[in-house]
Length: 558
Image (cartoon, rainbow, N blue to C red):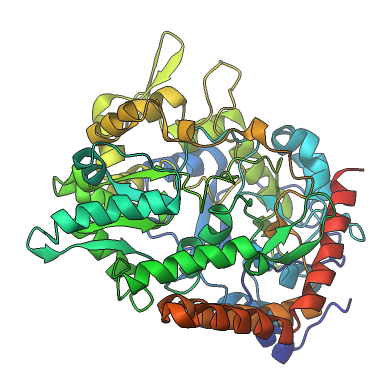
């Protein structure tokens, strides 16, 4: 591929979602550029395509300690809304910060020759990074044709053990308690619980009760509206695709007959007045405000999608109006595959650009963060201030834990604990350090200890200790050899990208229309939706993506 891309070409892919972007050609091998770093204080410029409302320019306690240990200060800029709009413009200008977290748009930097190959830098200067990624170093390679390492994965922790579940079908503890903790296995069970409570309580605190709401604001429509269609029909998360595990064939997951029936159920919920009339009009802040009021009985979302609202409910003394979550399925013929193993998925992370004057200093900084000392600092904070060591075990004092749970935003800004984890390399939950302590604070004992009284009561009523206990276990599924499909790099000049943009526009327009239509029109509209996807080139896109999946399997399983 050509290294230089025209401005108009970059604009053509400005709005492509992170689910399908990637790349395949070589960048400059600049591993030795800059020589050995000076130990004098230095500033690293950094851009993140994610948001970070709690960033205080490393003036938090952990940030100050990081600067003290490394001499590095990070001058960071974060995307305002988590979109990728600025990245193509940045690449077109040829002006880059030192370090970039591009989400799914790393391919734009690679194709423009803007990311350097990190292979030699890691080999010569980063023993902690080598230890961290260990057996997965092969998964850091860009592609079969280009085995350079352009990105150090940061979004996915290494050797992560998910101790708990965060989604997808949420229902208030108060609803469950009043109804005597009913069986919740299928969407019909879920519907009945919401409907039974709604009939008894048409208002809450003087405001109209909302049985079910969704968040369809921008990209969040995937999390709250379209992704649940495959989750509730037994498929794992591969972004916008369903991958046949036997043939490795990819197709848009909307084409599955099971998912059509899931959307039919949402159409039914709208028809009987159970779905929030503003579900497809409201912005995220309006969605959160409704949940914060305590009058939303249920939502279909991941826990992180409404965490601010949950905190607001606790602060307002409405802890009973926070939410329990269940692995609801369309019917009892499938099971939630959320915990199907994808191995270490690598993918999204940080890359060092050709603008960096001292790549060695940057890689050494990242290597410090990957060290035991760096990991403990980012996860736990400062010993004696944020945690103590008692009988060889790290223990968080009660007052610190209460602040962390009940005032998380201010706690994060002040202390910096957890603030740097999504930006830089990290071990996952369940990994222990050389002292036998977990690197992260998310151990099963801690999670259970921090459940609210209502959560503990609900879990006890359903005969489990943790939310994850309600979900099918990892061992019930065959591991996916391609990892997750949305992390597979796609050449930026591939027709996949252009077609997907059309598919995205069609989907985000038609799915709400289908859900809000009269039931008598549902089949006709859904069939027209599939025809429209195919007319936009979906079949060719699926064939091309199938080839990428098969190439990934070959690369990762040599």
